[in-house]
Length: 231
Image (cartoon, rainbow, N blue to C red):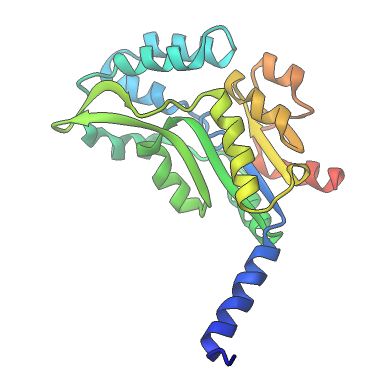
């Protein structure tokens, strides 16, 4: 049966696009893609900076359950105006080498995803500016232009980070051996240990000890060196 030209072109494009997905990188955001912990910046504005930073440090070092610690920290943000997010974004510093890493991986046919215990409200604008393909994070509940002190929906736990890696790989027909996971905190360990290449980036001791690979210089483009040696 005859197919219109545009159908043939579309089918060729779709087959080509599928073939071009050769791998998947999934990374943490706070402390990895960006220098700061987003929730700590929000807490400073709310006047509870020290209290929240202490809980964050304990959670990232594996001394507190992540979901419980996040609920405790978000509760301290209750009443904060949502209009603060653009100002928070102005304080965010993207880690050196991020642009080069993402651009190079896209050229090699990789998809790049972010999976974070942080918040869509902070992460989504960063992801758009860097051309990130996939994003999963928490969302803050709001009412009348203020934070309610609760997380909307299911919290992104270490188990959910691992599941995101596996799900995205499956959806894009990428074998686990062609996946990379990278992060700095204890909540990243499951996905780091699951991926084909697991990288501790400027990581807490508990992560650096258990990750197959370590980057101890704040330069995300060094992932490419590990990838080239591994392949």
